[in-house]
Every structure is written in structure tokens, then in C-alpha cells.
Length: 96
Image 1 (cartoon, one colour):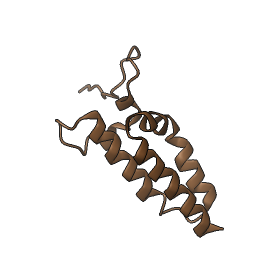
Image 2 (cartoon, helix red, strand yellow; image 1 turned 180 degrees about the horizontal axis):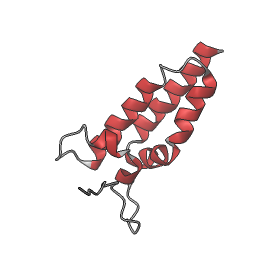
Image 3 (cartoon, helix red, strand yellow; image 1 turned 90 degrees about the vertical axis):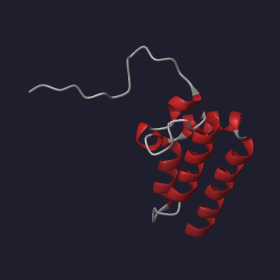
Image 4 (tube, helix red, strand yellow; image 1 turned 30 degrees about the vertical axis):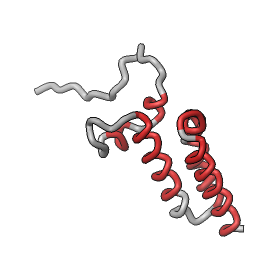
């Protein structure tokens, strides 16, 4: 029996802000969620995920991994982008 694994990439896809959100996260959202809602919710996921690592090096790696998303977030939800950066700064203070 053969099967195909859909990776969500066609190789010729067009960049969109939504494409910066991982598929696993989008799969958890309602099918009719707007791009703005997806961006908002993933930003708050990032804020929550910053609380888990025990070292600031790991926090930094997490935020750098999502930098292309954060760049788009700053355009769509600048106030939420600011919250992400504030959470990053607060986490830095906790670990230093």
C-alpha cells in the first residue's frame, strides 16, 4: 500500500503572513479563522511558550525561530508585537 504525506508545500507557494504560522498550530484553529485571528493567537502562544525554557539562551532561540512571523505580526497587530517584546524583556529580567 502506498500513501502520500501532504507537507502543505507545493514548492511554488506565494508568501503570505499566514504562511509564517506553523501548520500544526493552524490545524488547531477553526477553519473559518481569519488571518488576523491566527496571527493574534499564535503570538499569544509564543508569549506562553517563553515561560517554559529554563535558560534565556533557549528563550532567545525560540523567539529567533519565529522571527519571520514576528515581522509580519508587527505589520498586522503592532500592539500584540509590542506585547511579545515586553514578555521577552520580562523573561530576561526573571532569568538574569
